[in-house]
Image (cartoon, rainbow, N blue to C red):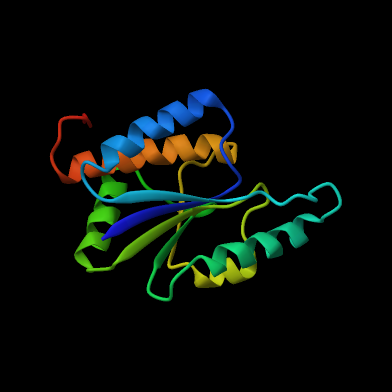
Length: 157
């Protein structure tokens, strides 16, 4: 199985890029992981939030394969503690799926079409974070989940 993070817009802050790269390297020690960035839309000053979600949704859906298992990182999704998230990951691994795709949307969330395509919705917190910061938080939690599954001494209870 492979894990893919699909995200809208590039990460611009150096400290976030450094942290994300740190966890990507560690995650790849457990499982193949990749990140794909969809460029941010250009005319955001004149587009409505609904129009932006529709256009971003088309770009997201074009990058998904029919057999991908899709997990939206969404503020209205299911919340897990770290052990619960590792259990979710392990359950997906045991399903013999080829690609587990996590998606971080743009500033206004996802289109209805993307919600319909999703297999799961997960919330990282009840709080709202910038989509750039979510990338780092998600990568750390993905790494933490992998260490829990593999009984690596990173996570403490």
